Length: 356
Image (cartoon, rainbow, N blue to C red; front, side, top):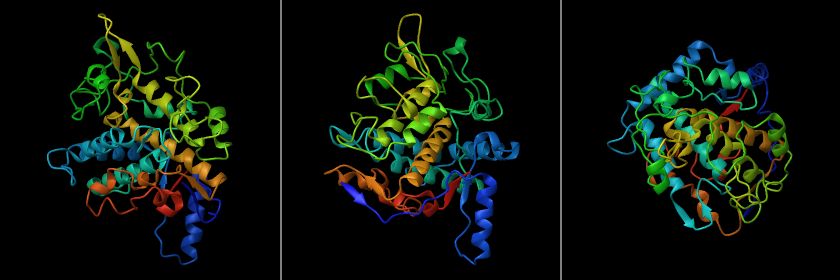
């Protein structure tokens, strides 16, 4: 289904922080009653206090019972949302939140819910920072001992042993049900073999470059048939940014490549394969870096929306995915705060936030 929307005005989602603040001041001077938009910052621009507030809120979320599901933490609830969506399909070729047009709306909703939850448990106006993969200083700021922690310890199968989410201080509770996930990501702690890749598919792995991001932003169509991982990358902005390669099955780019880069892939002495935490696609939110990664995916989509306003293409006959399962299965006022459909997720300004 191709949905023609009202022509949305061009929005400056990539404004500098100063420009965004000036825009907010103008809105306030005009007597607008709407609250100023939340501002999501590049991690390299965060203050030490902002980093600590974010970390403290994530740790508190992990220690807070979920308001949705008894017996699990509020943080782990988001891992469950992602796992449920990943393993649910109403059609063998069309999933809900991956390899389908709804990947970006679905994760935008997840980020909003996660950000709301951080604010709820901390009582502070926290926003999710983004990791600009093309910026080495952004990468350095994120993978530091004082923030997200660094790469894992090779002598301990790349267990994360430093930072606030280190082994012994952060426990993985939600595991993959996929056969390969059970055997290749069994660790009850975070694992990051950053940049290491011993599989036999991709030649090399690397973080996306600015040129690669710009190439994607020039693609004029959001998505095209067959609306999945086989959509031509030069015609489908969605599949280009998501990172599947229909010409080389199993090769990863962009979003998918970043998951692979953070997780890493390695072999033990007995030859068995292991992936890092971010390499288990259904339960990859176990690693908090997931949210900074997806904030950048969302930021790039917001830039694309600004440059190509007015059309969201979902694929003929797949409108049933517009409810973005499993969100509609949870009756909770928190869940419905920003809308439940893919169409309700179009436009960051309309949803109350911007990227600096």
